[in-house]
Image: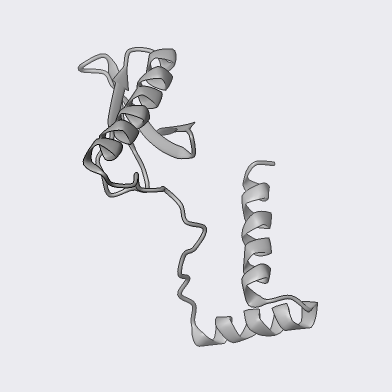
Length: 113
């Protein structure tokens, strides 16, 4: 699977050799938004068109489009790991939230190095 992005929305797509076409769907929202194309350029255009159509439909029905990310998520840890992370954050003089955000930034940066 591969990912394309448009206006903060991520579209996951794959190639269907039987139909000789790429098809995909928008991730991280409950509403169903799909797109398809025969080339990567067509797929990029189709994703953008589908997102814009989604915005238009939401406006038409009087609802706000779902946002793929709020910047908030819950993390479940063992009590022991939670305690160790909180202790480490306090030792570094930062909040647990900031400490976790920095840890995620380091982990993500390491994947793209």
